Length: 162
Image (cartoon, rainbow, N blue to C red; front, side, top):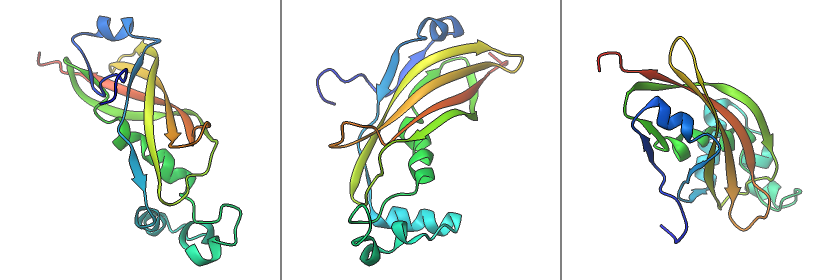
């Protein structure tokens, strides 16, 4: 881990500790390469075979000079890039609750590397547990603009057996 970088996992002992962390950056993931194989697998899974994603020869003549990742592939990486980011000792499970805002700002070309940084924007108490709102910024190595910025919602369900 480079100097000045926060650890990827932040563990909170209580809901109160989590509430107190609102406004803070939770951490930054390691870099992940987005190769053509990953793009092709995503195309297969989603039946989105647009040439700009899956045809390297044709894409050489396109606007990016190579293939690009699907925007939703980039968005789907929020989960693996941030999965261990926030741990609450009293939680039984965490569930994806939704997204409030997503923007794809810079195309992710095949062979690029991305990483995610998360900032805790809010924690709301609900009947089911705690609903967190985080701003996830997916950085693109070598670019001054991020690839994607999304506000994610995660429901943290308490372990009532504790």
